[in-house]
View (tube, rainbow, N blue to C red):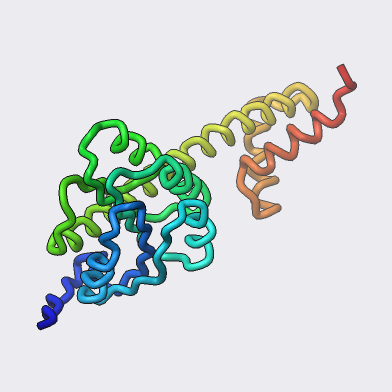
Length: 211
């Protein structure tokens, strides 16, 4: 008799809504077990992939919320294509593996895998593993966004300092006057300070004689 799915916890991001899941059969051939458990939990299996070369295109086409790989040991081809996915359209990836050695685990994490589960696929573990994978993926995405923002701010600060220097050198403004001038230009144009500074620096570079 089919097991009745447990009520969804509203605070659980993996249970608050039905997840669209893409399954990848990488040699363990337990996909039917995973698919049945996901269905009982109220999730939707959007597709099953058994060829590594189609992973990236299938993710782009089906846009799953989560990717699950079932493997005896994740193959090199699978990990390479997962790394491509991580670079172009990142999403949580779970690998169930029977290989407890360190190398494939490290390679999987380097490929962008969010959770690597060893030693047996037990249906009752699927829900907590999905929660962990989604939480880790969201945390890492937030960290990447923070890093990108910090790098952009640093780049803009360097541009602003260079633009101020050009205004001081070419127009004879003081540092304070140059900064006020940049701020006024940014406000008048509805742009960030760094964007205005970038245009000034670019214009100055265009006027430089070829070396």
